[in-house]
Length: 561
Image (tube, rainbow, N blue to C red; front, top):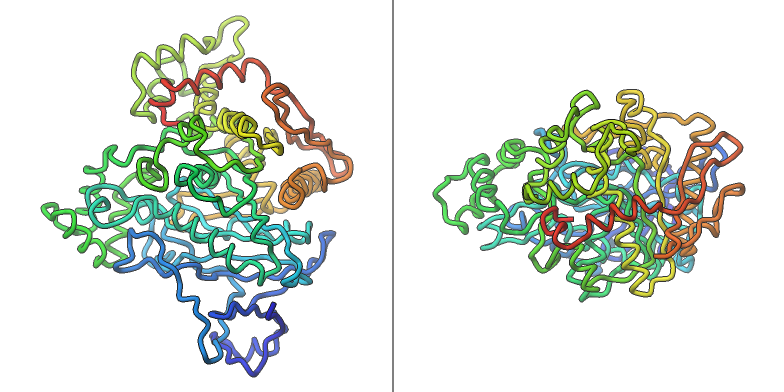
């Protein structure tokens, strides 16, 4: 690896050159580009020094004529003359969010970040944790998911995170895209970043043959869509997968579903004429200023733009691709938060009095569900607030329905298909410790959506109402710090050893593999500063029967799970 300290023989290109020349920061030379990183040494109990490289481009900026096209490769030809050093000591600007704001974020956002142990070399060949952020496919930024602690705690890995196009810039559909663009360009961005890792991660000490993709919510859905990419016809550029709270469910639609109206509304909102033919409309959209595009993004509700199936990348529903065996069999570790559904049920307990409230708040999110199917759901689930019911309130019934169809049953469904495909290393979990910040604001939600990432990423809490996917980091108390280290140990052990138990913390339980017979999973619970409270459980028959109900094909066809 061409790796060392900043040298006066290589010209440095950044704002404060005089301040950086004396900074013993590391440089990595990729041949076509040279990057200056930042070294940090922990002061606490974590491991050794970690080097960070931020904002590294992995594809051409998707601007102008490259808007709504698949990511285009960089020129990676090594030039004849020395390459200037690029300052990569900080994160790049995030991709344009929704809500979008002028001056916040950038279209030139196809960039990734790398964390590596300070003593890694090209011969280290360390396994790679590749993180895909969530945010409903309309918001989110890698800055909210730093992998510093992961690499410091387990210096046997290299960490990578990726930015990808979001909202209308990533998932616009309609006649203009059909005539002169590409569907699912945000997912294609992720794939391009994975392919960049295959080519270049050895220069950062990583092993391209030992890549694990990880993501939560929309990031977890992205992981699943990468597993089923191209109907399994192409080799996957990764070996393992960790989807958390797999969040696509009813938001996933066919390429033609509402596409004409969406495209017209967006085009007009940007300022292009409603009467343009598809080709002319795309010319107008690609020539529009970013401020005009932001107007179009903000004219639509959050979540209006998301991945679609029926194109080359996602030829069918992921569930149908799994049923047909058209996916990449990879080692698999997946799970959900106990009360994921409470984040998406559509209200608080006082808003749910009868089944009608569930229909109006939960089923209204799934436009393909017929009245007959809704009746089947209420016939199947025990009624709320009756003697012997597992649901003391209508709110609890609605929350479980909302959670089952999108989150609770997805990890088990896919685990069963991985096992059937012959994958031996399959693990599932249930996260059962709430994010204390979110819990304080809405105690009735319990261990709600994103509770797991609070502990995996430095006490991080997100707000998608801000124009830059606002996030904060809260300091842990001693018990929370223990659970955070416990979780990171399990996650990074899976990355390095194919098994979360091999490098687990002392005093934590061994995590057994999942089989269709045992249905074992880890339950993460908050202990104290000295002892773990996590335990292994078997998925009970009631949950198993609920998941079997939702994954009947005639039900999934209407709910697009």
